[in-house]
Image (cartoon, rainbow, N blue to C red; front, top):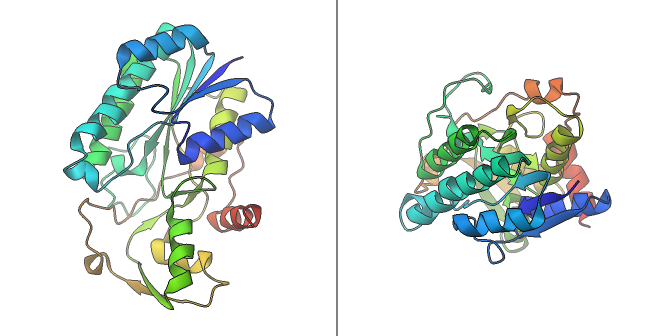
Length: 279
């Protein structure tokens, strides 16, 4: 089997490549310079050339605040039009598709964990584009999995873990938002789940995948920096204004993912394994 990975230079794209290499999986990975997914003709040409059996669609525009204004157009082009092109090509060439989405498709006010079947109501431009991308996948007719995730961190690229570690080097005290609740996700866990779905021929559809247990950004930061000589103090979202709306309660249920037999580490265990791996 041949695998095709989009978003080769991203956090998840690099993690997928690393995992495929470890498992001796034959794959072709494209970054945005090698394959502009917003160019429909180029996408179909790439699929014709590679003839993939499986597609991991990890390419995305993820600048959430910029998506509200300066990045609005590219946000839609990449997350909607680009995803549609990839999904349509996957259907045409009969490849199985695993596409990544976000918790931001939800309003983020639920007192209980969001199920895959719960009503969606994105509150920012990024979330609206990712939801439209989900619909494009569904409407393509491709054999597809949509994996919604949240609060992603990992070895590659910029993320919250690296930001906290960097700030701790030059600041004796840090303030972190403590009124947004969610689930951190290690890219390794996410990549493993994406391969697991294919390997185990799970039912197609939408799945939620993050690491287990819940946290606020303050909880997450405090765990990241527990061995650093720095004070981490909680603040409210109002004290940390951002351009794009951030969900206050964005916990997604992991029951469907667990029902496949996939074992999900807690975010604390995942963070510990990650930090150990990059020492």
